[in-house]
Structure formats: C-alpha cells, structure tokens
Length: 178
Image (cartoon, rainbow, N blue to C red; front, side, top):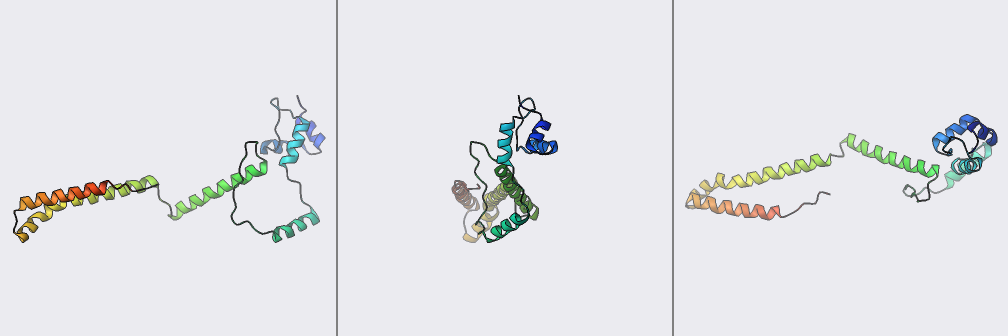
C-alpha cells in the first residue's frame, strides 16, 4: 500500500493536478488500490518526464540543434520487450499518424484506388475481352469463307477451335496483383 496522490504531490513538490496528469499520460503508474509507491513513482517520473528548459539552456540547445546534421530518413524506434519509454511511445504514435495521414491524403487526391474495385474492374475487362474473342469466329467466318471460296461451317469450326485453344493458353498465365 502506497501513499495518496496528494501526499505524493507534496513529497514530489508539485500540485496534485500535475500528478493526475502524469497518471493519465502514463508517465507514472498507480497501485491497484489507487495509491502510489513513492520510490517506484519517482523512478517512473524521472524516466518518463522531460526536464524543463530555461533561459540560456534553451538558447544553447537551439544552437546545438541547428548545428546537428539531420538524419536522412526518420524511422520509428524499435519497441523492445522490456517496455517502452513515454517518448518512444509518442514517437511511434506520431509516425503512425503521419503515415495514416499520408495515405488519407493520397486517397483524397485520387492517387490511390480501392484494391478490390481495381481487381473486379480488371476481371470484368478480361471477361469482356474473352467474350469478344469467342464471338469473333461466328462474325467473320462466313465472310472469310466467301473470300477464300471455302465451306462456311468448316471455317467457322476451325476458327472457333483456334480461338479457344489460344484463350486456354492465355488463361494459364496468372497475373500477379499483389
């Protein structure tokens, strides 16, 4: 059993509102009964809370940041199994939000299409193409037979057989849509 939130705030030298904010933000973890173990809470507070920057320190850090080379590409930190700090969790959250917003913007611009709709559209186009080829021998066999001086039915059967064989060969090709 630990101490109350107000007692911990007095111990820490902060307001009880600051302690409540730290609990809500996940910087410190209360016990199951709602009290705080002062030693554990102090360790979590120090680990998960950034120190305020004041006066000349802030200017010195600004100069340091300007002189530091920027990383080539920002990457999310890897989350180990030993838990994460609040800063790592926030960084991961911001990276995920940025990626989500990028996808949402691309969808609004029309740069992205729904995968299932695209696959259905391609399937429909392929079916229409196949049907057009299957109807082609019936449309042209009589004209071709008259031009070549052949019997129309025999030419129709030969063309139909050739088209069906060719379509079977094309059907064995499996396009990769992933």
